[in-house]
Every structure is written in structure tokens, then in C-alpha cells.
Length: 144
Image (cartoon, rainbow, N blue to C red; front, side, top):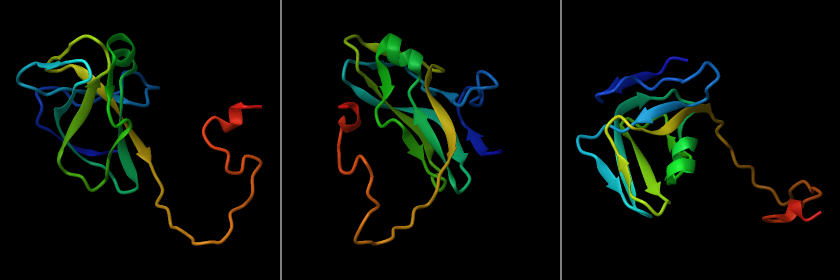
């Protein structure tokens, strides 16, 4: 799949680390380091502008290494970049650790996955098909 991108950052284009990687790392594109304090959130620019094909979205997800080692995650994970969005891709990060985290220019801050999605059409009805689970809520399937 080919996707149009404008790179106004100081960094190379997002790329897959391996042939089997699902996500591409995105990098912070900042002039000054950002100190992200515990429980603080920040919007981090990437300098990237994309044209995602209709029927697809770009999903923004945390990097597992940052999450486990530093407690840094994407606040609205997974974030969605819709096919009609043309602004700069910016990432909402939050520091869930007890220590400050310094975001440096070029730091790999998240990963982006391109995913196909379907459009739903609602059908009003009076009944839904019955299932064994029925209306059992959170944790319901783990009680047996």
C-alpha cells in the first residue's frame, strides 16, 4: 500500500524495524526537550502530515519498551488518524511513572499501524440473537 506523506520533520520517514513488524515508530519533532513530569500529559508534534486512504485509519499505539521501562504511554491509545484528517500528526503522551521523563528531538515516542476498517450501518430491531453469555458484563466469562 502506498500512502502520501509530507515530512516537515528533521527526521527520516517512519519505517518498519523488521519485515514482520506491524507498526512503524514515530519520532518527536521538537526544538527543545520536553520534561514530562509524573501524571503529566503533553501533545508531541511529529512533523508528519499523511493522506490515509478511505477505508483505512492510522492507529497510534504506545511503544512497549517505553511503557515497561519508563511508564510512558499514549493517553488515548489507540489513537485514530482518520482518512480525511490533513493536519500534523501529534501524539498525546502521559507519564504514568513516579519520575520525570525527558523527551528529546528524534525520540521514538509511539508506533503507527495502518488498519482497514468497515463502515457500520445500524439496523433497528426489537430482538437480538440470544447467546450463552447473554447480558453478562465485565469479568462474566471468567467466573466458570
